[in-house]
Image (tube, rainbow, N blue to C red; front, side):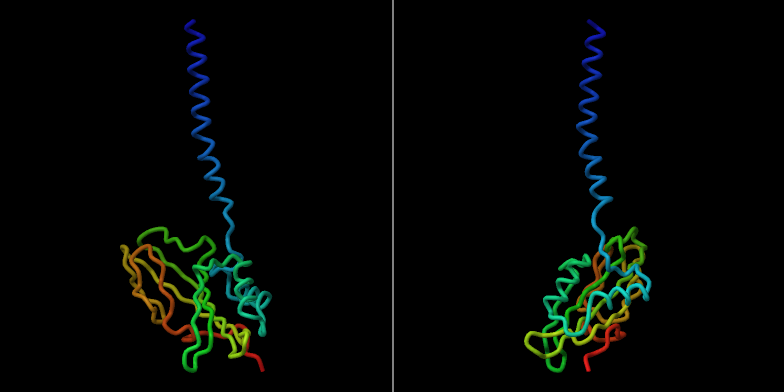
Length: 182
């Protein structure tokens, strides 16, 4: 009788342990296999420029550019549309974070990003005229930002671990990746 009680308790404990371990195993494997963007700021500059030239070309519509960004793993939350304003054309800003995503490891982490400015012509529908990029970043120290980005941000620099706001001027301090249409 005693042996049967011990065996049934042991069996119950094994079932309980398996029930607890299964979701943990599934959630851990789900995290490790989460899709990562193909386009990210961890690429070296030559790889990044090559990937941009392969996926974007002058004359693409706004919708085609958005679709290509989505196919490359860029989330809608990392893009911002700047409407035409005065002499400034329509611009779609896409912010690329490191391959692991925006996630500072500690209160003294550095975060680097690349802003892509897709500049559209004045036509209807708007077509991609040129593509510009700007590499930037900041460093946290004890939860505060210690070096400001090179461009003025539309929002104050956040405390750890906040994301940086978009630039006031998406054309400032950029370099050309895809030249304008002739």
